[in-house]
Amino acid sequence: MRVLSGYRIQILRYLAAKSDSDHYTRELRREQEEIDTIPDTEAAEVAEILAEYGVEPHEYGPVVNALRKNPQAWLDFMMKIFEQTLLIFGFAKGYFTGNKPVWSALQTALIGAIASAAAFGMAKAVQGL
Image (cartoon, rainbow, N blue to C red; front, side):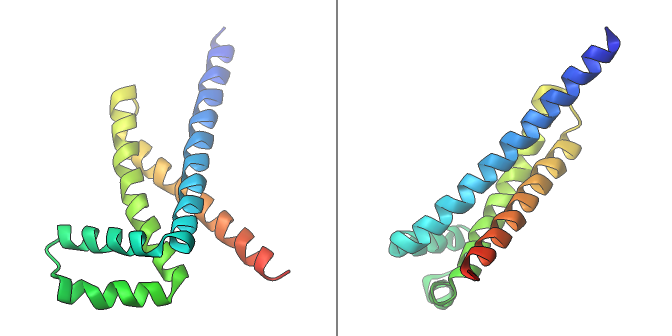
């Protein structure tokens, strides 16, 4: 019975990791689509994020404009913010499920980073065709 319980735990961990990875990939695609289709809204989102940190409009304006000129850097910036969210989510998930919160936070962020790298690699491969 103990072996079956161990397998069940491993399956649940795998499913949780897969869910985290899928969520990150969906978020990456969503951000890319928004940058492509509604850039003004995305630029306003970046401005709002920077303003929350006390950056003034005359200071963040050039940053937002620079990001708009480099869509890959813009996507990377948005995903860095998402990765911070993953750390917080992973910590909370670990805390409330009785797992080690720090480990859960790192695991969630790592899976997100791996998913991001895979998606980026696939996008580069498709562009090369």
